[in-house]
Length: 305
Image (cartoon, rainbow, N blue to C red; front, side, top):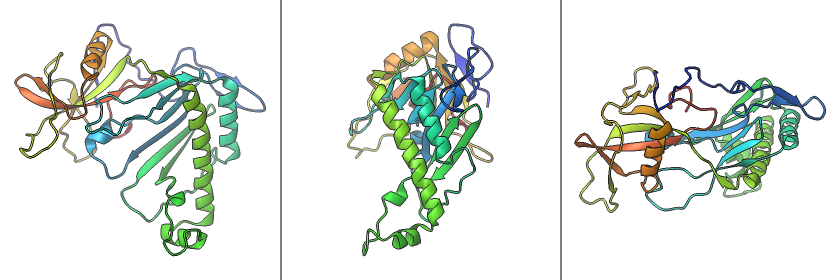
């Protein structure tokens, strides 16, 4: 998919990729045989959970819950209120951890077997999300696990402490259950380190907006969506259709906003909700807002959501 970039400054054509994000990128060695890339847009650790029984609007708005960059910067998704409708923009927090902490996490990943091919099994349940965990020690190690953590949440009504009942319910072997628990322990350790450090709101300089025409509000709908005027280009033609994969028709168009356009759009979104109707060119639209992280520069597509 060709991504339309809208901004006031000249924009580079090359997209940043995991582990190769910055011209200042390199690797560092901390402790015994612990290496990782050190650039400010080099992803060393990322946890990203998506899928499951949720709407396309929800999926397009998902941001990785944890990212650790090579220079020690962290970005996490912060707490949100339980209000409905939710805010248009997510609560993204940032901060800094030192390289010794990154090295300790990379060592933990290695000791937990995450640099090898692991079998996590697939629990015999439906409609759960898949968690992707990435660790970069100069080589990308990527694990995709369906329904991570469900093994600690599902209990047998007759005997909630029975490992046999749990294994029978999920269809997992002992080895698969142990691998999932080690991965969950690593994710928890990384999230705890990052969350403690992430004390400031993330300043966003690029944002992807996914746009679709609004459907009529039902007469008995108890929630008023709110109506705002869109301050930029006509939403009917902005960006490109989102690639939904082979044989799928898209109802969304997506554009990446940068520079002054991003600033203006983000200001408009500050008081909006996820169901706000945006008026443009005589029609109304719904916008899914997806702030882009420092290593990201593209609209959502099959390969990055």
